[in-house]
Every structure is written in structure tokens, then in C-alpha cells.
Length: 322
Image 1: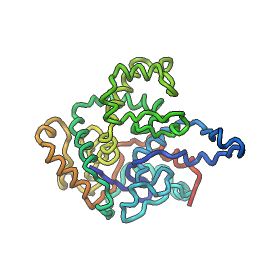
Image 2: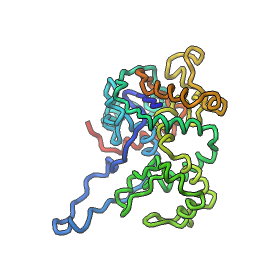
Image 3: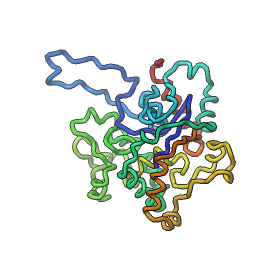
Image 4: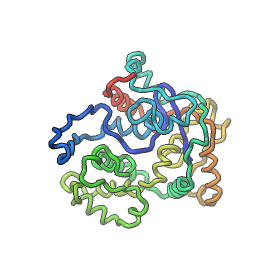
């Protein structure tokens, strides 16, 4: 299910694709002509900020990696998402107003062309497999492991483990795609523990900076990484919740009505997955690919006010562009 969500004026959707250089990094000075062939231009190392990671997860799909309104989902929408790099965004609105808009949203429907959605059978299968896996995931361990991953791993391996982090281009060999089902099936937890603690190739070891417990938590999160996890996190979790339980505020804030007046999203628990066979779920997922109404979301169930302020801080640090 690809759930496209739009917050026109401020924040929209979720995103797919490789992460480009930080938009505020600026151009690098080219080497002399005599050296350019032998010595590649150095890429200055940097780390994700918390606000940047949140922006990638929740906003970049429509607003784009650089906040210019040109994300991969934007082409499907009847109304172009606005640029978040406009200086007046922060001069004409208080931080409290921006936080409230992002957290609460408002009722809005935007037309988009279902034929533009690249909902392949591979995506349907990946999402179906993840939905069936949801009831078995130890959420406390996974959330704790995600914090460890975001602190040390995301810069090279990327938000969804695909090896597309901002540091990846500077490495002599590309980082491993941790979300690959083939890799996941071939590597054991003990092998992952050894690689993470001792390092391998250009990947440094973490033995001196992470406890064994933290490494085990990071492995728990790595085991969740998959194409299905990425699809669900970006396009489904806003309504269905990260744990497969719909966010209680969604109905009134997204649809402008009370929970009893709209068809509620299902809870993806063990009872649901046992009661519905694969073909039933495939039909449902395909239907969501073809859905032609897009509700403007709230983020109250996904983000808190402090996380929204981190996103705003990230956007403020980007150079203004009209």
C-alpha cells in the first residue's frame, strides 16, 4: 500500500531514492587540472542531524531532498507542493504556528493520477510480507536499536539501510545494502555482531563506543530493514501506525469526522493476518495503489512537538531559495 500524504504549505509525504549531498554544503573547489584525473575531489565528512533524518522520513517524498517541492511523489499530485526554502515561510509564521500545522494538519483532498504510481507486484509482495511480520516484531528493542543505528550507521548505510547515506560517495567501496533480502538471509546475528564491533574494510569497529547490549539492539533494527519496511514506513505508518495499530487521532484530524463515521484502518495484529489469506491482502494493497483521493495527514501520532522543531531547525539552516 502506497499511502501518499500531503501537507500543502508546510510538510508532505515520505520519500524514496538516494540521498544527495547536503543542500547547504555548497560547491567544492576543483583540483588543478594536472591532479583532477589522479586525485578525486575530497568529500567533506558530515553526520545527519536529527531534524534531517526526520525530514527524510516524513517530508522529502513531496517536498524533495532539498525542500524545493520536487520530490518523487510530487509528480503524482494535482497541486505542486510548495518550496520550503522560501524565506517568508519563517518570517510570516511563528514557530508555534508551524508546529501546530504539522502536528494537526487539516482536511484536504488532492487529485493525483493513479497511473503514475509505480505499484509493481514486487512492491505488493514486499509490503504483504512486512505486514504479516508486524505482529512478531519486538517494538521496544527495534525502537531502541533504531536510535543506535541513527547515531552511528545511518551516515553510510542510509535511513533505510540501502547504502545511500551522505558519506557513501566518499568511501572506497559502496556500503552494504542491509535491506537486501538476500543479504539478510545469508548473514547470522553473530556475524553482524562481529562486523559491527570489529569493523570490516572501510567500516570502523564500534567496540570502544558501543556496549554489547547496544550492538544487539542495533542488530534487532537491522533485521527489520527490508523493501517492505521502507514501503510501510513511508506510505502506510501515518494512518496504520508504526506497529500496525492506527493512530487514534487520525480519523478526526485527517478526515474531519469522528472514528465511528468513517471506515477505520485495520489493526495488523496476529488475528488479522491469520484471518486474511495472501490473495485477500494483495487485492487490498492493489486497491490502495489505485486510490485516487489523498488525505492531508496529521503527524501527532508519529512526531512530537520537539521533533517538529528539529525539522524546522534543519530547514532554517538551508540557504533560502525562491
